[in-house]
Amino acid sequence: MVKAKIYQPAKTAMQSGRGKTKGWVVEYPRSSKVCPDALMGWQSSADTARQIKLRFPTQQAAIAYCEEHKIDFSLAATQKRKLRVKAYADNFAYGRVGSWTH
Image 1 (tube, rainbow, N blue to C red):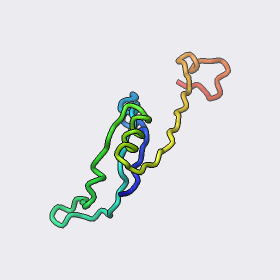
Image 2: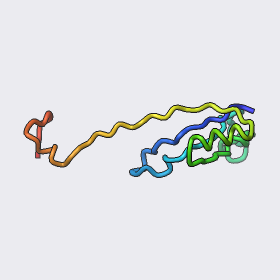
Image 3: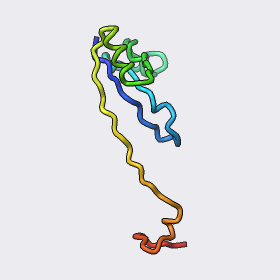
Image 4: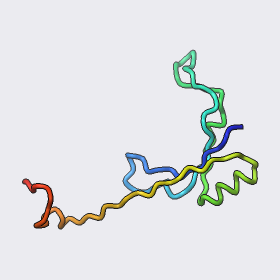
């Protein structure tokens, strides 16, 4: 079987909060090609492992699961997001870089 991928999911563009980004996910990459279904034209594949997505609270729990079940895995590095601390008062600061128009 192919290697499983362990990663921490990123926030989607439609989320304002940090929902579903705290845990870790184990999933399998696509092992067979996708072709259109003859009847409806939807995407179909014979790969059923692609449908499995296991969620774990910690990275160590995901690694332990893969090692216990003898699953080869690759660990994807997570990127920390940069927070730009802003205050409403910065919009009216004297040393503001951009022009203030209203």
